[in-house]
Length: 422
Image (tube, rainbow, N blue to C red; front, side, top):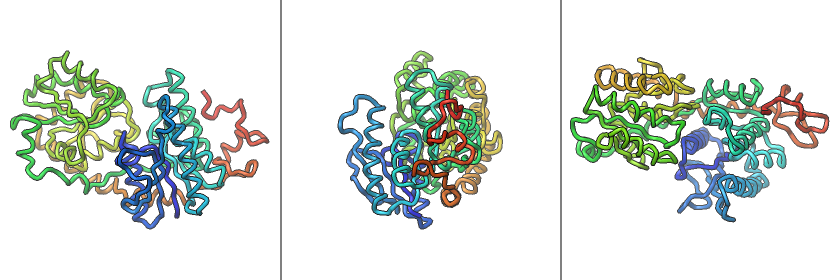
């Protein structure tokens, strides 16, 4: 099968978990014998066209003309996506289009209708979920684009049962359009660590300190402020704790100020952006990998920590509930509750036997349930079952029998329809 992926980020451009998920899926599909082309945004020092791990990657210029804001950048990128996508489609290099998140919705819709190709879409997260509702026009605009993509797609893939329920609730996506396929993890990538870990460790913590590690974006939804609020209680019970917070984002300076106001300067290290080998090494050295998210559609960071054999503590939200089982392969705490977070970290630090047992089971679970080869086969099967919708005005709409009822005789969405309207 010839598959065209549309994704605004792709390694080495990594803003969040989407880039890695798209790359791993694309490479796994290629290993299964499929022809995969990824159309994505450009990145400094990246070539316009490259062939990596069996995947053809096309990078388009999304910064010229110079956009005035982020939304304009996204729209310029989609114009270029359309141009590159049309080239591939005209050459007969595409059987199916797979779009990832709202940032690709405009080009996905245009290419689908212009060439009458089936469209699958993966919704990795929603604006409603990230913000616990829609509070301004910017958020409502993004949410509308998300709904638009779910409407246009023949099939909507999501990474967890939690996300399936969210898409049903927020956008009223018909059940027969939805398909749950989890993300995975490349376990072998997390075995690459610095050769002398004991010596290397001294760059980060004193020999007697236990490392509590977080890596990810510094945004409100990730709950890093809760970890800082939990730190005083953790240190009161376990003075040898050392907190290493890797990553960056719009909340970084605010988090540093919070750390200072709590008197944690000597115990909290803001590591900034770290490379993969450093990340893997810190996972291997960590007494606890903590992810205190307020919203997490899947939580691939937990799988990565588990693959690196770090004991994990996560909030009991979203996809975390489906991957981390309390006191079986990790510990979970009440979301938004810093006291509950502190208690679970203290429990892990105080019981090394429990920590080893949890990390051992977690590693086994990752190998058994979240292998990309298995996930690629599930995805390919979902492509094969993608239905062809009814013809409307000469185009093939991405609708099932349920959503077809929402169209008027002219093929337009009825204004009275409640399918995703807010």
